[in-house]
Structure formats: C-alpha cells, structure tokens
Amino acid sequence: MELPAVPQPWRYWLLLGSYGLFLLLGTAVFVGVEAPQEAGLREALRGARAGFVRQHQGCLSEPGLERLLERVLDADSYGVSALGNVSDDENWDFSSALFFAASVLTTTGYGHTVPLSDGGKVFCIFYTLLGLPATLLLATCLLQRLMGLLSHRPVQYLHTHWGISPGHAALGHAAAMGLSVLGLFILLPALCFWALENGWTFLESVYFCFISLSTIGLGDYVPGRGSPSSLRHLYKISITCYLLLGLLAMLLALETIYELREVHSLVRFFAPPRAPASSSSEDDDRLEILNCDQLGLATVCRATPSGSQVDSEADGRAAPRDGPSG
Image (cartoon, rainbow, N blue to C red):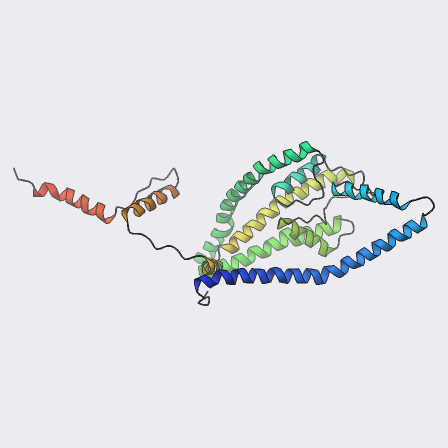
C-alpha cells in the first residue's frame, strides 16, 4: 500500500485536521436531522400539556401538575417509571443487578438504572476501579487465545493449502470475520429483539445491538422492560450473556482488521520516526536484556555474543598457543 510522500511534521496536522473535519461533519448532520424532530416533539408536548390543563382546569392546578411531573421525571432518571404497565418491574433484583454490573464493567452504561443510595454510589466507584482493569485483563487474555485459533490459523491454512498469498488471505479473512460478526451478533439478535420487544422496529433493534456492542450505550432503548415476570429474569440473563460474548466478538474482529498490512502502513504513515539505533555497548546490553525479558520466565535467554566478546574469546583460546612449550 503506497501512501503519498508527505513531510513528517505535516502528517500530524493532516491527521488532526481530518479528525476535526469528521467531527464537524457529524455535528452538522446531527443538527440538520435531529433539530427539527426535537422542535416538533417540544411543540407537541406543549400542546398536550395545555390541553390537559384546560380539560381539568377545575380540579387540577398548574403548579400541582408541575410538581407531579418533576417527581415523575426524577424517578424516571433512576429507572423507576410511573407508567402502569411497567411500574412493577424491579431494577435491583438478581437479573437486573447482573445486567447493571455487566454494563458497568464493559463501560456500556445505559443509564436506565443507577444507584439510589450513597452507599451504592460509593461501592460502584470502587467496584469499577477494580472491575475495569480485571475486565481489560480478561479480554486481553481471551483475545490472545482466540486470535491464534480464529485469525492466525485460518490465514495460515489459506496460504499453505490453497496457495493464497498471506496479504490476500488476511484481507479475505478479515472481511469474512467482519461479516460473521455482523450477521451473528447484530442482525440475528436484532431479529430476536424485533420479535420480543413491543414497539421496536427492526432498525431500532439493529441500532440497539450496534450501540451496545460498541460500548456506547445511549440508554434510549433498553430491552426487558414490560416483559412477562415469568420470563423476565431468564431474558435479562440471556441479554447479559449476549452483550459479553458480542463485545468479545467485536474486539476480535477489530483486532483482526488492525493486523492487516494496509492498516499497519497507515499507522506507520502517521507514527513518529524511530530513533536511530546506537552502536554503544551499553545500549546493546540494554537491548539484549529487553529481548531476554520478552521471552518469558520459562525460556532460557541466549544472547548473541557481540564482536568484542568474540574477539576476546578468540584471544583467550589463542593465548595458550603463544606460551612456552614444554
């Protein structure tokens, strides 16, 4: 993959400017698409509120309605709904708490359920401080295992048995991996949510799956609300397992794409140049120590002797020959 020759100092400004333009593009699109929808919703809400006040003017005061709405909105921010069909749903039973813990440790954070007590908020802080590094460690170990099994071996098999070049085999395998994750962890679960969740369209189901597996978790769509109590616990536990497995599959696909030669070329294009290697013996000794440490504890490190070491050993072997003969 040949990239245009650009002076090194200009590459950072090119990357920063491109990202800034991409950010502004997203801002402009969201403003143009969502602002009219928000204005229409505000106007409809004002009309509905004014009509309700006029209809119950004799028995309902406007300040009383304001206080009621404030309490309803405040409770809704903690995951407690005032609607009759979902008011019996508990946010802190076992399945709901498991779903909340998984959303915290995966940094999804839907925001539909939050700790109510001060003790719960303090525990959430320390639980997250310990849980996030543990989650990263577990994900890293699992990715290292799965990359060799599901990424490196298939590419090697395509190269050795089918005669495909490593670059083309890696590119084809990355495309197949991305399509598999798209089908198995986004489109297929979206069909299930579309069938199980009342009022969800297929687009909204796909939107929820992608927002969840990318750990954005906006919280505008949360499954399991209003579901039958007999199946709600099993349903939420199944959703928790899906989020954990789907996140791992998403990371595996992204790591496979990152290892492509074209992606490495792009990264090297913007990366700072490497410092020239020093020929001093001290730097060589440090490099040999680093190489030994990278081999692990169970591997015996055998450093290659430098030129000075070879000369000294040769002089030592030749010294007895120069001595007096018996």
